[in-house]
Image (cartoon, rainbow, N blue to C red; front, side, top):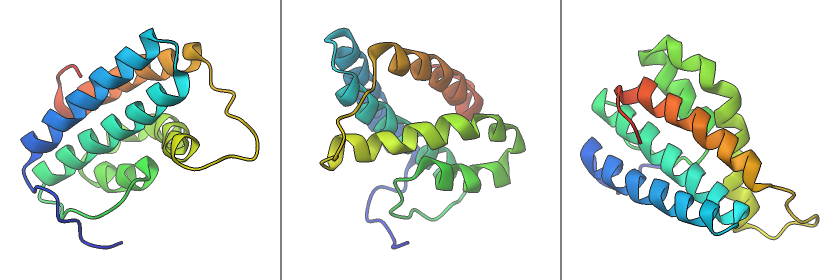
Length: 130
């Protein structure tokens, strides 16, 4: 894992995470589950990095939510309950960014369900809504 050159300020990451969250909502409404899934992953990645930076974590170039969750659990063991969400949503990054041999079978309902769980996860990270 290499050092990232992004901001070290949690609020900067939260602001961009909120933009990605909004993009996800727009794409969900527009019937684009693959695009919505990508921005859900992006939003959670940034929220996790904001949480970690707030704890003194040194910023790293990591996109896998489950790896970021490993670090977060060191600060709050209760976040472990979101492991399955992080593992599932982590894959959305690759679904949208890399050509797949088999087309994505993501449905709007799948992403909507993950969005609801992700809201609980964000509340667990910061005690506030996305």
